[in-house]
Image (cartoon, rainbow over all chains, first blue to last red; front, side):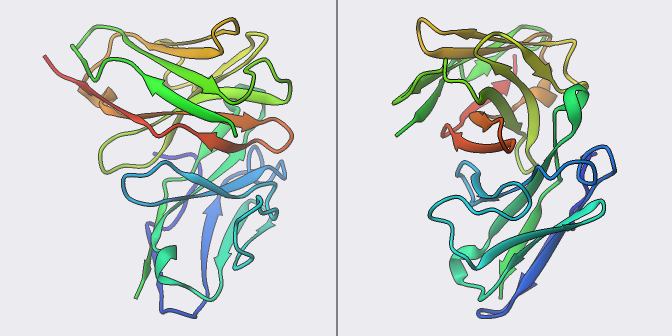
Length: 111
Length: 120
């Protein structure tokens, strides 16, 4: 069982927006602004899409955005495109004992 | 451009020790502000953080694997390594090495992954 809770699936039509949640505790998501999101296509390595809750690495489209409220972080994908279909994982820094914790992943389907 | 490449046996027998190495190219493993670590993904399942190491040797391990895991760094070879002891079929997975930025704890560089199967 993963430390962070994500919905197993999400979906949307091209052009629509979809939001994926990531729920933790005050010891991880709620305690630090160090939530990251990763995109993973089948058979590929994960790719960093969001770090520090809201920041995008160079090259990541601004259709991807992140936010956080309390113990829950969210990833929003706006203007859905076919290539956004992938698995998405959240992580959070969790202090020096647990260091990094993962969510169980969400499969995003573009209808 | 920094690149990571995993290497090691693709098949390990039950009860033996899994050993993998990650070679860093295009940059120095001794750079401050980065941790170097391992992530695994069992077939059809999600990602699991195994552990991370700083170039100085400080380590952090997943509590659920801590008793079986050792991560080490060889700065002279620009490599870091994973050893997982007493493996079972449950350790069958794709193993990724990655770089974690300690300013924001995001994993910004990943290896391509290597499949390790535990079977007799």
